[in-house]
Amino acid sequence: MQARDLPPPLTRFVRGYVAILETLLISGVAAVVVIATLQVFFRYVVGASLSWSEEALRYIMIWITSLGLGLAYSRGEMIGMELLVHLLPPRAALVVTQAGRVLVLAMMLTIAWYGWKFAWKTRGGTATAIPVSMFLIHISVAVGSLLVALHVAATLVLTFCRGTEPRSTEFHIPEIAE
Image (cartoon, rainbow, N blue to C red; front, top):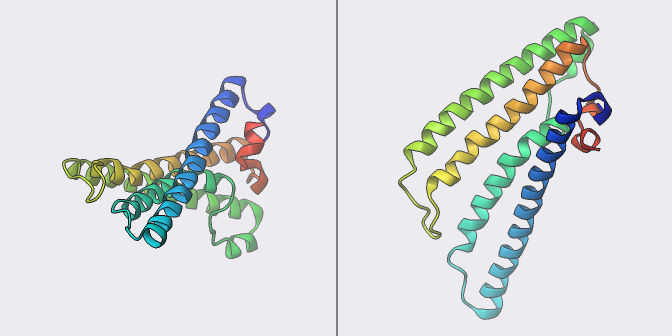
């Protein structure tokens, strides 16, 4: 799917969405590298570990994973069990694939709902070593699930409108965002 296939406002939205997510992901990975390097330096050169680094690394990596799930799905980088589906006739394969996507969408929305409920229940707590509300950590589950649900829903709608299964390269976000 190329940007020319989308209406201009949607193209701008997709470009902005991808730019924001990729910026957050790159910033998160850079933060992980910097904090891990500082931890190694302080532990082995200075002789005094940073008390907050391991917890900060854990939470940053959780958020990186949650934010990157939707992009990974759209780029076809998620594991799929498609061997038997490919053996079916094209029309049956399309129906089975779409049914699977509906189930994934329902599951992601369920996970988002319970992720929100859990995050809300833990909003009063703070992390052990860093002064961050546990709500900000736990809400990552709901956010990641909603992002995957958004990508799955977009795939469902596009496939339904076209009547054919999109090629795996059609959902590569950089191609959409060009």
